Amino acid sequence: MALSFDFPDNPSFLGDDVIEGVWDDPGFGQYFTDHMSVASWTVEEGWHNDRLTDYAQISMEPASAVYHYAQEIFEGLKAYRHADGSVWLFRPEANAKRFENSAHRLALPALPAEDFITSVRQLTALDARWVPGGAEQSLYLRPFMMASENFLGVRPAHSVLYVVIASPVGSYFAGGVAPVDIWISTEYSRVATGGTGSAKCGGNYAASLLPQELAYAQGCSQVLFVDAASKRWIEELGGMNFFMITADDELVTPELNGNILPGVTRDSLLTVAPDLGLKPIERPISLEEVTTGITTGAIRELFACGTAAVITPIRSLKNESGEYIIDVDKATHTIPLRNHLLDIQYGRIADSHGWMQQV
Ligand code: COI
Image (cartoon, rainbow, N blue to C red):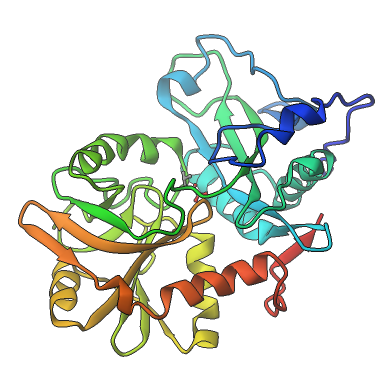
């Protein structure tokens, strides 16, 4: 039977004075709404005990398997407030599908797409006053699932917890849409063939943290990973997909080879590219092609994309052997592409792909 994540009988809300201070500068992932969606799963009962409840601490024993073996997955999607005050989700079914795929790779139970969407819709509806209305602001929804069984043997857990929390957000990067410098990680890899690269699991992000620190030390704000085996092929950044735009107006991104997260923003940009005069192409991209192409002018623009950061232009790629700088003043496609996607999400242009769902 489908889960319903019903509203609590007497929901409690923080006073308006508490949230008013958030609107000026919500930042990213710093504030959380009044409630959360929760459901439990066991081998014996399947999914059950679905509910909306106060945002509060999760109580789990120290022996819970997730603390030891990282059997955990998550998602990220946003709700947008349109000019008429209505609230809309962007492609929640795409996140639901990816969550199912991630669950399969991490040996977690599948949460049916219908239940995933209900959990997100219900929380957004109950906490709708937390959906900000400022420029580039939105409500970031974070569904996650983790092993909750108290057991130290290494096998898939027999009990699991699913939770959705929500956070009013502005820009992911403090500099907003300002172009960023990227450090190419050759020492450390994010994933390897046959690993968890295409799953959205916490472990992939944990593995990116040390290389990310090294990037900061080089004055860069993100790290770019190449394939672990040959160190030749570009994969993705620590938490975003990689794109380049050629002098021939091709919009090129690494193909989904099992090591790359199938980003919803990535897929959306490939879909809208022809509307902006760009030819979408998914294929292997070598580091050499990019560094040479920047130097010769064959590659005009680079950017990173994801739900959290939308599109962030890349100003330079750096590694031990040099720095390759894009002339961002000559970038003509990145910002129009970004604006096009935002216009759909904020309801400023027609949603011809049927991506938006009203809450
Ligand atoms: C997103 O873009 O939603 C991400 O998951 C990236 C990062 C915040 C983990």
